[in-house]
Length: 161
View 1: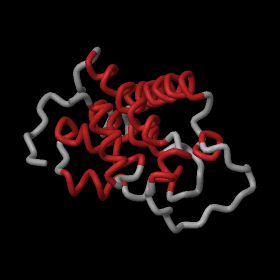
View 2: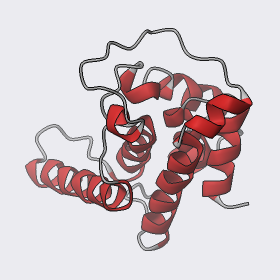
View 3: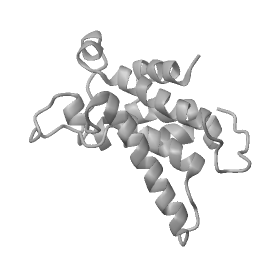
View 4: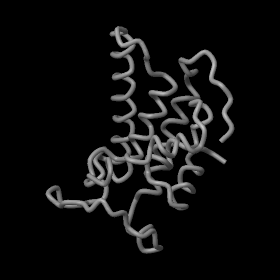
């Protein structure tokens, strides 16, 4: 199963958009399942249902940071390279979707206040939302990027998920 298919299935099973993208890559990132789910738990719905940056894209960013990010806070070159990577991944996502903002992807009014209470995942919910397709797209973008580049980390411990 591809990472895109896995992400779609996770979303349909109840994971938020960020969790659905991060979890298929957890093993490569050195995370166990619970840690990955917790790490991404507040980023669904465009950052805690604030409807800002799409959680699927945030999931891409988490994977990219864990695999290719810098850890030396004095490493300006590493910081600049990571910011360039993040912008590149965002541009790829936006090229396919037209935006990186959750509220625009869901066609919600800009001034609409979103409740922190998540919606029930019903058949109607999935018919009205592009989210399952967006998490699949995000996972594919990240999977394709990884296929063309090795992770920065020399050695990633094998973690049971």
